[in-house]
Length: 268
Ligand SMILES: [Zn+2]
Image (cartoon, rainbow, N blue to C red):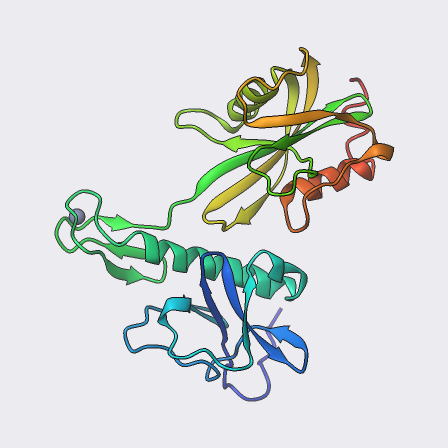
């Protein structure tokens, strides 16, 4: 099919993603918050910018004056305010800016790195090229019949929130091995039938979250390694406080609440 030629003006109005430490600058326009547009915020001549279609990302520390209509907002909280494509762009921009601010020297010889592209830097001494690193992490919903395991990790700020078992993928292991190991380490349970659910970019600061479900296959719940301080199997009509959106854990818990996994794990 022949593509239609775009009509109208060709002037592109980029949105600005001005960010740092999981904060995001938004503009208050008659009580409504939105991303700043190009031209509304000035930046220092040495500011390092990242360009991708429709957006320019830069660090909060590089702006030249804070506009009176601007506010600093939590990047994660901006999910509920911004259209989803703009939140996704803000998350991407924040990950790039954080990478740029935190990885500035070649790990081999200490030379200051130079920008090579929008997503890479290179070392002028040894020639190595560096890209933003991701930390892969899993979350897993353990199902036992009609019940699901929800736990409270000591790192959660809200003491009432219960969520999924989670952990970082270690060198040399598969995602399934990671799922099995984290559940064993944190709860002493054994699982089977590990299934992939979906993934989510999580730029706080650089995780890639991968969600799974698994079937309880034995063991007595015990929080051995101290990372989890409480937890239990819950039924759909007794779900405790769970993480706010846009967390992948919440998406999976809501999918279970809505009966999504009943067929898969009906043999439990
Ligand atoms: Zn080097």
